[in-house]
Length: 296
Image 1 (cartoon, rainbow, N blue to C red):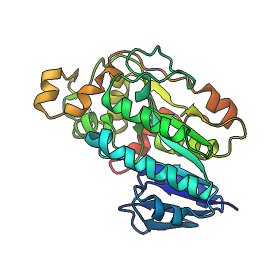
Image 2 (image 1 turned 120 degrees about the horizontal axis):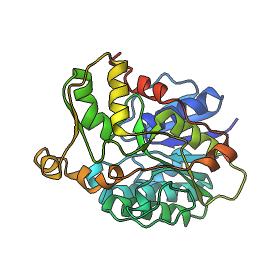
Image 3 (image 1 turned 90 degrees about the horizontal axis):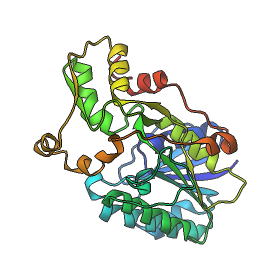
Image 4 (image 1 turned 30 degrees about the vertical axis):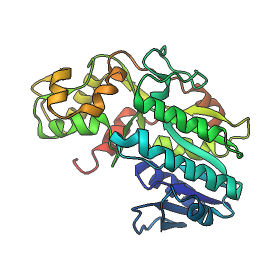
């Protein structure tokens, strides 16, 4: 059995650790606020990923490090770089492979859809630039690195535009507003599928220093809202899109920058992950049901 370290104890990091532990591997799940857990073969260790020396001590003899840590959304351009730098230095110090959890922001608003994993990064936002720089620093490491890129999350405990903006109103059966074009088809990634893709990518035997897209489901925001409401047996009296002034008045400043993602269809080509890693997307109903676990 192997030894793995998962940096970041959010929904994806937690699920990644669970999958590895269930396979019988020795796993450390670490973050600044990690608590105790009852996962099989998983030890929770509190640590700060920006401290490369301490993280390297934890990662000694690790086969791979999974970088699943998150920074506060409004602080990506400042807080993410020390996290990736500390994780890269720790991986180099112990000679561990590096598996990075990323997203689609780096492709920018001018990228043609569907997005392919070999598409050049051309960010048009501060957050997309931050993600691009993170991957550039990882891919320049002296150890093999691979990035798994996901779209907007669905799943239990996931914090996403859908869970923050639309879900509370859906649960209460109130008029529901969202971002952008409600009828533009959009890719949704299930946190459990993200974790499965991370684990599979860590075992990829081809050439590293590349990216994989998480196999995802495609549905318009309106379809997602109405399907979620139906699963909750709610009647939604109205669905509409927020205007930019409304978003500003409601304090959604960080979402305005990324609203281009919902202005047009956002399709993701994950055929390489499906073919090379053997990962298939879960059904949309499964994703929604897991998102609603505390509400059904």
